[in-house]
Image 1: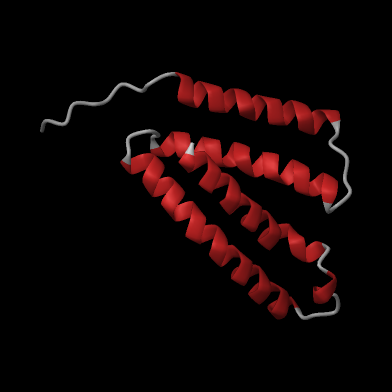
Image 2: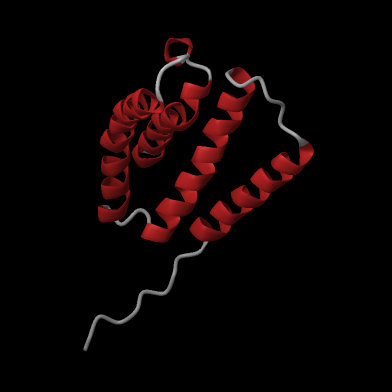
Length: 122
């Protein structure tokens, strides 16, 4: 659960870094370089959460690398759906909802079955 919470928090920062500048009033009229620097500053906090999430989830044996990536993508989309509705004022169209449902199904497939562990001998 700690891994999922850290991934969620990190994705909130990343969504703000990638898309927040589209609506941040203080960036209106600023140069692209200034916008990029602000986005990098926000993304720093994403990395401060994403790295421990991935390390903890992987090194504990709770998740494989593939599982972490698939879960992270699903969380990214969930965070973006909320962001798009609240900040960008965009509605979730049916085709996006179906696409999101298919990604949720991918998370289930990725985590429901334990992969066979290959032998470690030479």
